[in-house]
Length: 58
Image (cartoon, rainbow, N blue to C red):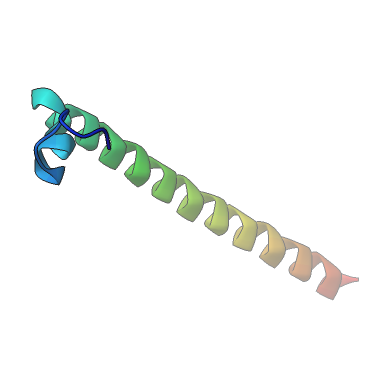
């Protein structure tokens, strides 16, 4: 951090009054990525179950 630009870490995190929007956007993106990872994991598990079932039928 550059000395003199912000008085404290809290002031830096506030981002000149726009911190609410910036950090809120980061939160939304993090939540969307988390949901995407959960969705991909479920899809993978479903595909693996189907493949195991097909192998068992052979």
